[in-house]
Length: 96
Image (cartoon, rainbow, N blue to C red):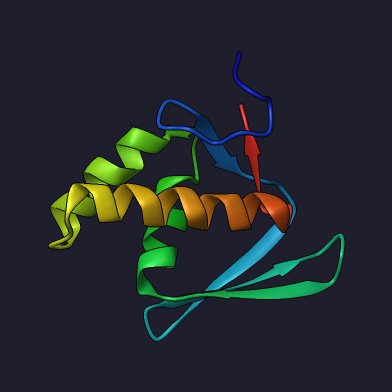
C-alpha cells in the first residue's frame, strides 16, 4: 500500500495555494504569504513549477522535461522525484 506522503511515478501533485511567484531572468522566486518564507527555483525547477500549476502526474512531468531537455530517463526520474520530495517537505506542493 502506498503511503499518502510518498511521491511515485503515478502520484498527482499540484502547487499549494497562497504563493506569490515572479520570474527573474528565467528563474522563479516565490513567497509563501502564510509563512513569509522565500524560495528560488532554477530554470528546470521553474519549468516543473509551471507544469504543476494544475494537477499533474509525475510521469507527465518527466515526459515534458525529456522533450524540453536532453536528459536520460532514469536520471530525470530520480531528479524529479527528489525535487518534488523537497517541495513537499517545504510545504509548496500537495498530493491530490
